[in-house]
Image (tube, rainbow, N blue to C red; front, side):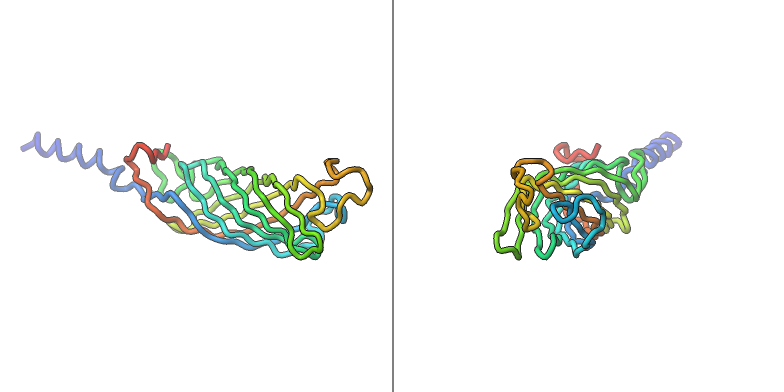
Length: 208
């Protein structure tokens, strides 16, 4: 009897971490709003100048507790026009991100860095311009509930062409000169919701 009780106690101790383990999810979907401004021919370096509404819709794949890949459809104001962009942005978190703290030392809150590549264009101009874009930035994530996330993201986006602001090469130096290509900046607060539960024990869904 004592041997059976000892075996049962060991099984309960070994299974306790598994019973306490939270559900994890592969994907997030959500949206956000914020403010934006740009650096170009009409603004050479003043932050938060001529602010305009910024908004995004995003879907995120969580590869593990630190690496995520965001597909981001965003819009922001540029002069009197509006710039639209779709970008893919890997995100690397400083700490393991999750709801229940376990042996992996997960935290509700983590800063992150991001960079990616996108394609965008301006609407509302006589001569609309399209460009390859390079978004890069940083932010913070906070897990509000087991399946709800709040994220504040600051992005600086380099457009690899001139004319996004409706002004093309005003100083006649050539549109390939770096100072003639436009930059855009935004600060956006987003809310996302987790879905599709991760299979913790599956080899092809390792959580690290």
